[in-house]
Length: 196
Image (cartoon, rainbow, N blue to C red; front, side, top):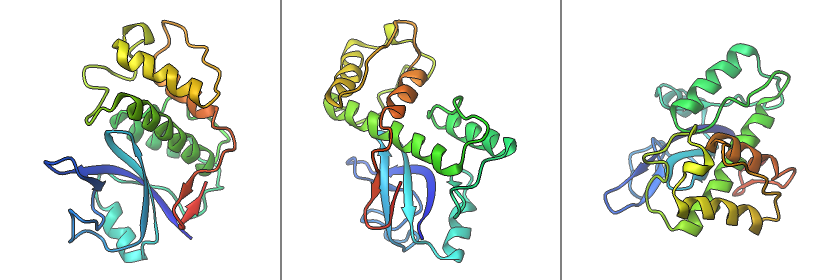
């Protein structure tokens, strides 16, 4: 069974990217385990599914910038758990204000992953090699987003056949969440490790 984490992406000077703390081409001394990553576009955060051992898990979660999901994703999150996840997400430019009572870790992990999938497409359209939120915040209104990103956000939605009903005053955080919701029950695959 895979274990899921949210953690930063390590970026090299020549823009190679991989999950921080895990072993990959540019980090040969990282934790040596199988992993599969879904990144937040060119924003240096990701969701990772791994097959870590207990010792590797303990090493990974000892880092303050790592959020670990429990093995049983179908447990309903407590208020304290939702608050902790909200704080983590907001600290790392991922909307977290939508977390609500009576939702499971799986439901919330799926929403986060689908937000990342949406922004991946937006940034694929833009071709941005670096963080597109530079100079913006999650509270920036749609009407104040630079035109290239503005257009790419709509194009990414239209390409997927989603409803694009965005008002000028809608904040980036709301748009990301609304687009995530429209992934509905489409599965998200983490290689051969897991499916959400």
